[in-house]
Image (cartoon, rainbow, N blue to C red; front, side, top):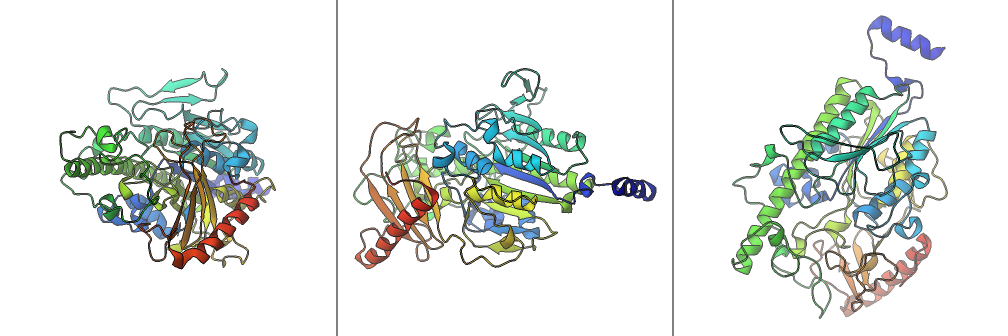
Length: 497
């Protein structure tokens, strides 16, 4: 009865009736890009911020909160997405490599949101192989998908994955535009407007190989992109007395490097080749980023026009970080900072103070409990993360909040020549154990590498230029960190190889 009275008042006064007024729950718009490193976001104040790469995301950060210590638990696409949808670490949900999948019954976040009264949708890059059946609506890319005129798989009468449609037009349609078109159409025409919405809007961009929309072809033309110092100087980074692993910007990795990807003239000197490869690499990456940022502006404009902006929790993150030339690395996978860090920006003026920069430790296993907390849902026992909603709302970090985050990469020497490794990171220290065995990870190269340790004092060496593992001055500290690693592994239920 109250609902009908409210509708009558709205109609009589000309006010727009927000459909979720009955539940008084906020909408949730969860936006995630692929491989968007935090150093590629202006609000994170890294070396690329002088280029103003993300004006829309910077606005969200000014009007909301930004996490400075948010980390991925396995820096590769499918495992990260599995951790987000399940609230579980890779060794628990079983998705340790790109070959993993999460079936409909285990898409816990969508199920619980639906049970809480939300209309749910998944649009864009899914990359979890199984049908996103837990969502009321989905339109997703198959696998990585195409950058231009993408094919989408949609819910329909035929068994997954036979229902498909493709964007075709005289002018090619970029995936970032197409994904946003679909989300906007769903928001405008969704079936259950008496409910709040939970929309997971996932961009393909800026995953490599980078293909930006044509309108950005000349963005950064004539601009010299700032280089990281470690592009040229390795220092004491990495394993002692062993080869440096990982694919490269320059010619260091002859099998695979960014100069090959960017069609740089191989006859150039090593220095000229690397410099040209870096500039092409960063410009293509940042052009894809600008397409993401501009399409987020379209979503915000829609919410503002419908009066839903301030009643919608807006989250922006990426599925992991990305190496943008640091230490002459490309791609992700590493536990090094630029790969390990996830951007996380959240806006909700109802309860999140504007302009906050929060430094508590969080990781992607915590995302589902946090979103559920905003929806009024208690975290189920099978989820391993914890909600950080109280800290977003201005409360102090609890005394029992984790002081370290756990990481493990399983795909030994696959694709980008990264040895399998694990470790922990506190606010100012990092310990990594490269155990160098494929173990039970499908897709890993069956070629063990010599095990080794790395240890970094991030308070003095934030760029990880000085591996202290053999420094006697740190021997006691390293021993304590190894004990902390064992405790953390026992806490999350993983075992030392």
